[in-house]
Image 1 (cartoon, helix red, strand yellow):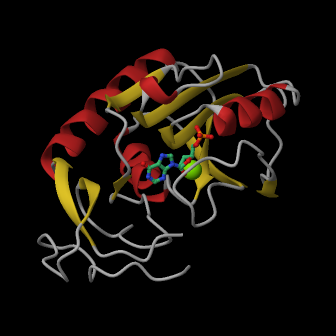
Image 2 (cartoon, rainbow, N blue to C red):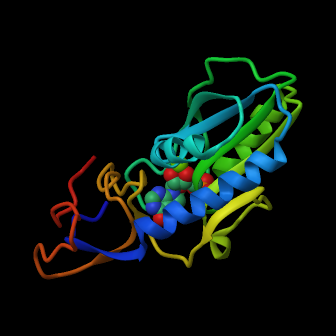
Length: 196
Ligand code: IMP
Ligand code: MG
């Protein structure tokens, strides 16, 4: 776990995110038109900001549930081993389900979650991911809807963290390590990385 100082360079502005979320919500609303209820499953914790914005743009009857899968811990690389830390509260058998993920990286997390949820017999299950890093993919999986494809950079903000920090940044930025102390970008957390 590096304890180097870093700055955050803006990659996707809050305005661009808002416009994209609106467009995604329009597509999802159309795709699930006529549903009696859409169960929107947010993958904790990284999707909490995205899901909050997305559900408010959906013109559908919606129920919100959450699932927590083990993630990177405080490291910057995938463990490739996925565990369910918190399961859904509700049943999804026979229901329309939308899984909302922050980033699809190697794809291990999404693959595991989708297989698990499919085994419960939903009527329909689709995935909306805010970000996708296609160049990092190790298993063959894609979200039905993707907000933005991004290069192989470690990103934070809009719910996404680095060692639990920077989730409250309103835009998405990439982490850039520096040797110089604390020349943090506007809105960024103090530069030194703390252990989780
Ligand atoms: P995967 O299993 O490798 O696809 O990893 C997916 C999870 O890793 C995402 O849900 C994120 O929580 C985390 N992750 C992947 N890339 C980043 C990143 O750039 N910043 C922060 N978290 C990331
Ligand atoms: Mg995640």
